[in-house]
Each structure stands twice: as structure tokens, then as C-alpha cells.
Amino acid sequence: MRFDLSAIFYSNAPYFVAVLIPFSFACKKFYRKICDIYFIIINSFAALVSYIDIAYYPYILKRMTCDFFSYLQIGFDFKVLLPSFLKQFWYLFLLFFATIFIIFFIVRFTNRIIAKKPVFQPFLWKDFLYKILVFFVSFFISFLCMRGGFQTRPIGLIDSGKYASIQNAALISNTPFTLIKSYGNQQVVEKHYFMDLEEAESHFSPIIHTISPCSQYCYPVKNVIVIILEGFSQYLIKGMEPNPDEYQGYCPFLDSLLRQSISFNGIANGHRTIDALQAIFLGHPKVLEKSYIETHFVSNLSSSPVEVLKKYGYHTLFFHGAKNSSMNIESYCYSIGFDAYYGKNEYPNSSDYDGVWGISDRSFLKFAAQKLSTAQQPFFASVLTLSSHNPFVVPKDAEGLDLTTGTRPIHTLASYTDHAVREFFEAVSQNHWYDSTLFIITGDHIGEGSFPTPCSIYTTLQIPISFYHPAANFGINMGSMQQLDIMPSLFSYLNIDEPLFSYGSNIFDTEYTLYSVNYTWGVYQLITDDFILQFDGEKSIGLFDIKQDILMRKNLMNELPDVTALYEQKLKAILQSYTTRLINNQLFMNEK
Image 1: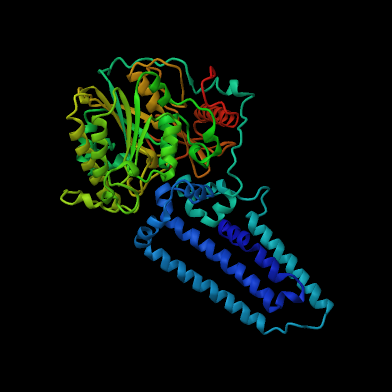
Image 2: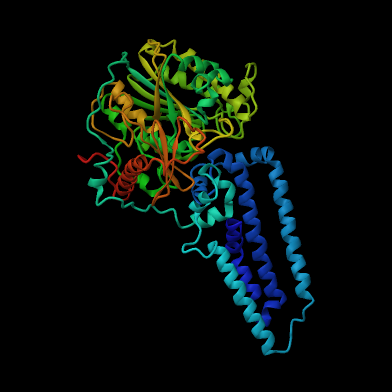
């Protein structure tokens, strides 16, 4: 209720001031008309963003904040997407128009009451003083509601965590409130937990001076293909789920492939595709409201692992069937060192366009396989799928496929993507370089409906990560690994011992320890093999044993103060290191 009242009074404060001002002109028709227009517009907008968020929340697992509008500027094609959203969420538009009707009814009702009062009344001190009293009492009540109570500091985004666990905090808040509180609060604030950067990086440093080679699982590798599956959680692939016999899975081919791989309990570093790309290919954690790609810092100097691979002779390619302007992925890929980008513009047959996002996976992956068959070697390529994305429209080229259906729309699309990946492997396996190619398979983030309920913050970050080599039958599960670890681990597998800038680590190093960083709903998470620490920027607010309590129901912070202090120190070091280097344009090796 505090969050709802805060949003209502923030939005309508100008209206309340205008109509309660203790002067006679406040009852004039023209003046009232201006007030009514403001009331209708501001409350209609609040209703609109609230209904949009009902559809948007399941995809990004947080309430809408002002970063949503910057997201619209990096490649959202509303002319194409709006019709599909109208079709999928038609009931929300009906609710929105019903809300508009109620808003007009309120305006008409209040005008009827005011119309009964004469516009011109004789001046009486008693009435004037009464109006002043009403004005200031109303002002005080409004001010109190806006700040959320009598407490020292006004309520903010983080305060919803006081009334519910982080994964349920969105139920306590509301969209107008999160937009208001995040407005003007998108700037990067440099963290100062330690005396300086050097002290912070004595606890965690992004400078990897030496990468130990992966000797135990080493097979000859000439080329590398990174397959990033849109919206894929571990729970869509039977073999990845902790209890595979109790979960159907919708991807039999990927399941069979991963059973022959070095597989990991993958941890996503963000909730959007662009978060994954900055983690995988640049080694940057997602610890800001905006993704690195959305900030002006994207033009800063940075060390790119992709550029390092080019020094070793790798030809670098990126494939994504979406429109080339989508989320600025094409520009981003070129900026970090990819030699070639293949998107919808490069695809030869526009009739395979799915009508929403781009070229459907089955058609586009065949195109990618054809391009790779003639690519200059050695190559480092990445393929990002797109069909398993909301609004989950089954593509035209799925005709004739025996798709597995489930309880959620994404289940059918996951089955479709599984078929597309199988055909991709069938095509590339015909090349002479296939047996000397390493395939890294992962998800970008958790898609809507791709994880079971009930869930926790932790389960909404679990994605597949695996290393597959056609000449080997590994069948090994090596524990947990985050997206940030992919490139340092790849360098280890390729025996490239070159200093690397990354907030990830080499999974094949015998001294490897997982420290996965994530930022969700105004709270930082540090995930290790055993625990997840939650930190609000000033203090720890939760510690959970994810091996024994995957749904994060029991807070162990008070029971394990030493563990809490250790992980808090590590997280503070990462936050200070990243924000300091980001602001001061130092996201690169010191030698540069």
C-alpha cells in the first residue's frame, strides 16, 4: 500500500495542488479543464505502463524502470511487433480502455460536484482560512504518502525487499513507482568500499596474467563455434536438470549432445540478451541498471577477447537472424572485433521472415552452416538463435516437424529450436573441419515460462553451458560456471596463454572458484558453488545455501556471519573495481 500511495501522489501531486489552491479561480471552467486534461493524461499513462509491464515482467523478471526507454532506442521495431503483441495480450488492451473509462468517469463525477458551487462567492475570511487549512493538511498528507511514511529516508526501489523476498518484491511495488524512482538515477556511481582501486583488486582483480592450459580434456581444436540459445534455461533440456527423471525436457537432440559434453550448471549474468553478450564476449558483469551496450561508456577503450583471438589468426564471425538494427547487436559485434556479421539483411530469402523478430531459426541456421562451410580458417564464430522469444509464434518452416508441446508457449518453440540445432549440426558435420571444432553451447538468459514454479532468483539464472567436441565423448558434469567464465576457459582449452581482462575465471584452472555477479531488482547477488549472497549496495541482506535451499527460503546471514563477511568483501571488491574502471576508462589491461 505504501508503494501504491507513493506512486499515486507522486503522479497526481500537481493536480492536487492545482485543485486545492485556496483561490476562487480554481473553480473556473477553463482552469478546471486544464486540470482535468492533466489528470486524464498522467493516470492513463500510469495505467498504460502498468498493463505493459504485466506482459513485460515475465520476460525480464523485474518491474519496468527507466532503462526500458533506452532499450526502445536500440532496435525495437514497434511497427512489426505491436500487431503480434495486440494479438497475444488483447485482454490487457481491453483492461486499459476500461481503466480509461473509469478515469473519465471520475473526472465527470468531480466536475458535477464542483459545478454545484457558484464560481463567484463573497470573500469571507472564515472560508479562506478553512481552504488554507485544507490545502496545507492535504499537502502534508501528500508529502507523507509520496515519501512512504515518517522514516528518515523516502522509500525507494530496494525497500520492497523488506516486505517480501527479492524474487517476490515486484509484487509489492508497482510500475509507476519504479519508473519515478529510477528516473534520473541511471548514472553510474563509483563505489568506494576500499581505500583505492589497488586495495579493491587485491581481493578480486579482472587482470588475468596467466591462463593455465586445459590438459585433462584437451582435444585438437582448429575452429570454435559458440551457440547462444535464446531464452533457454537448464529446465528445457532434460539432461541439464538436477532430477532428469522427474522432468520431461523438450530438446532431445541438445540433451543427447550435452550428455557427451563437459557440462556445467550455468549461471546467467543478466536477464537480457545484451547482458549475455557483454558477459560472454567482453568479460563485463551486469551490475548497473543499464547494460554496458546501452551506456555512453560503450565507446570507451576496452580489452576484447575477440580481438585477442584475431591476433592468433582467427577469422571472427557472428550470426543472428534478427534485423541488423536489433538491440544494436551488429554495431556492438563490430566494435569488439568481429570481422563479419550476418543478420536479416544478409539472408538471401526475405520470405523466411517470421513476421516478428527476424529469420526463423531453422532457415537461418541452415544459412549459417552454409557460410561456415566456406569460412576462412581457423575461425571463431557465434550463432545467436531467436525463435524461442516472446510472442512465441511457431515459424512457417516448422511445418512437418514433430514438435514436443508442453504447458507453456516456450516449450513448443524450444522443441523447434532443438530441431533447428540438430539440422545445423547435421550440415556442419559434413565439413572436413568438423572433428577439430569446439562447440560451446549456452543460453543468453532465462525465457518466460522456461523454468518451473515455484522459483527463486537463483533458479531464474540457471542456463545450460557446455563444451562439446565431436571427437570426444566427455559425459562430464563439472559443477557451476557463469557466462563470464566462457572466454577465459576457452583460452585455456585453446592453450592461449595471453594476459586477459575479464571479470570471469578459467573453469579448467585447479584453483577455480565461482564468483558469479548478478544485479536484479536493485540488489546485487554474488553466487558461489554453495551460497548466494544478496547485497543492497550498503550492507548484506541475505545469505542462502543454494545446495540445500534452492528456493532461498531460509536466510542464513545471522547464522553464518563469517561466510557473509567473506562474500560481502569479495562482492564489494568487484563492484568498486568495475565502477571505478568504467568511469575512468580503464576497462583494459594496464599495459595499454
